[in-house]
Image 1 (tube, one colour):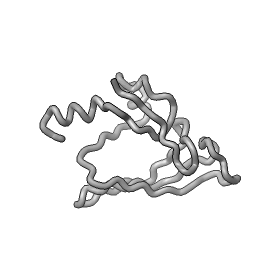
Image 2 (cartoon, one colour):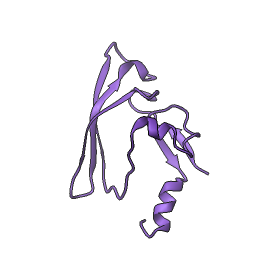
Image 3 (cartoon, rainbow, N blue to C red):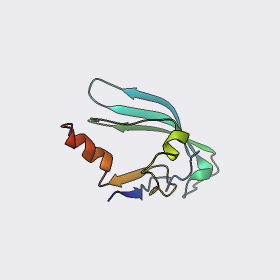
Image 4 (tube, rainbow, N blue to C red):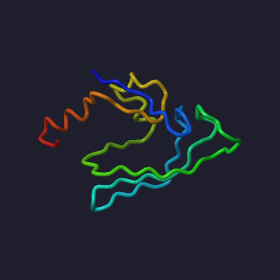
Length: 106
């Protein structure tokens, strides 16, 4: 069964649908996927100062597959009810990842 665990970042746990603002996504020929944007300082668990926004760049390497959709669509999808409101989770025992392997993908 899938298990979602909130990732504890240097800003703490990122909570809420308006916590992570995504400005740009880049994918290169080496299977790197880079996200840039801002994190809402009012929706983090470890408030270090009075900054309202924290810029970020997050790069994943050797990306074989990823899924994206509009936020309200995602929140209404079947199979996401186990999410607890964290904006950045590690998903263990992923059904989606297993389905890729079953199709010869991974």
